[in-house]
Length: 145
Image 1 (cartoon, rainbow, N blue to C red):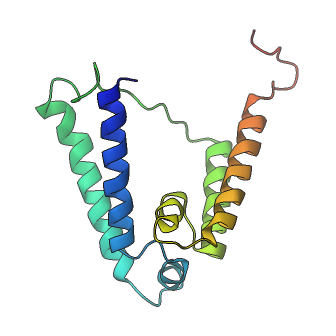
Image 2 (cartoon, helix red, strand yellow):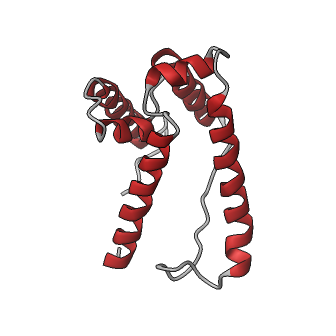
């Protein structure tokens, strides 16, 4: 990846983290009150983020010949299968129990919310197990070389 791309990723991540902090999504108690239908402030944040993303994904490739720092727009392969649904359910259960999502957890560290390290440790363990699980050869199918 080129240095300009890495710089763009850094700036985007800082901006994203600032937005999460501004929206108070870095505070698990705020997220849990939203998930318990006690505070709907995060609904505006969610709606705004989804709207901006939808517009960017629809208009970006039409208005630009190529992304600013890459050769072409990429395609993101996605499959709706039992692994996707199971992973989404597991993620949702964990989010509902803890009120912690990966992006806000990392952004919360920037504000000194150090107990989020425990949640991040669990997230990394889960990502490791998922990577290990996905890399296992299926029963009766030889592993790729």
